[in-house]
Length: 180
Image (cartoon, rainbow, N blue to C red):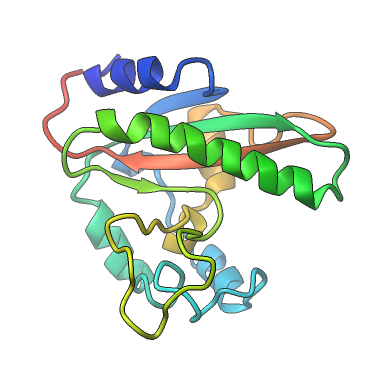
């Protein structure tokens, strides 16, 4: 186990449901994921600094993240009333983001965290004006063209965790020198 993994797990306590250490080669960047963003299913395409096309092209994203040979992915699992429980999903996302906040201080210097859903630091993104909080802003895994379903399969993490649950993913590209 990597030193950073031990520190992350210790900082998160029991909040992490599943996790895996992985290498850059394990991550699939997908034009299909980018196409879903272009279709604007979430409503943030070209409306937020942390969403496409403002995060860069798929090729630029691959080049950017290929500089991080090692990564860490984790999930949190949350109970909800049913698949229409949007309030429960939003509450669960907030709980997931609290877990991200717990681990952020122990990440190796230079690490980059990609979270669940779009950036929500501001109620309304300043785009096209400059980002008000670039040090806090965070892209989602999918906004960077990463196929979360294939990632989950590759590292043997559940993409779904049963009826009346929601699972959120965070991927951290680890900076610094890691010890295996």
